[in-house]
Length: 154
Image (cartoon, rainbow, N blue to C red; front, side):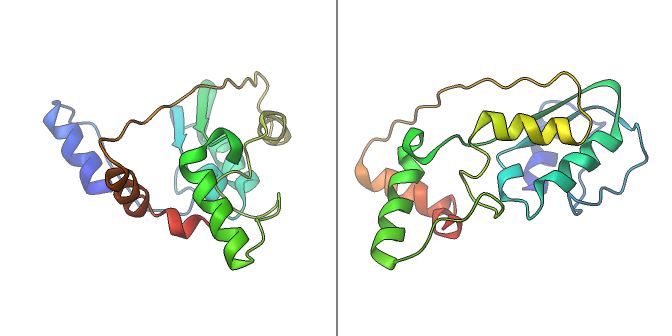
């Protein structure tokens, strides 16, 4: 993923991009280092999202922005929600609790906003957006689900 990001940056002429692997709960950066922090489709999968948000708050400059993108509820995400529901039902696998990592654990906007406020963010807002995928065939959809690591999200 990092190699892809570096390649994409080079292809559009960006030279001030650096990628690193590190623990989201212990960011290896000085306080007040960034104007913006973006976390796309990962916060809900962290073992401790509150710790990760605390670190984001620590490294963001005064007046900076933190944006996260998470899935809402399973019923609003049938591409992943329906296969997970079927797998859990047929495999007798319980859904993760609110305190466990999982694709839909931060889907409640009030819960997500509360996490931001707990670590000290002041102006907190969330918005919902729809994302639609269209596939040429059922096989293309199944291939996409398999390649996205869907089975790991149980």
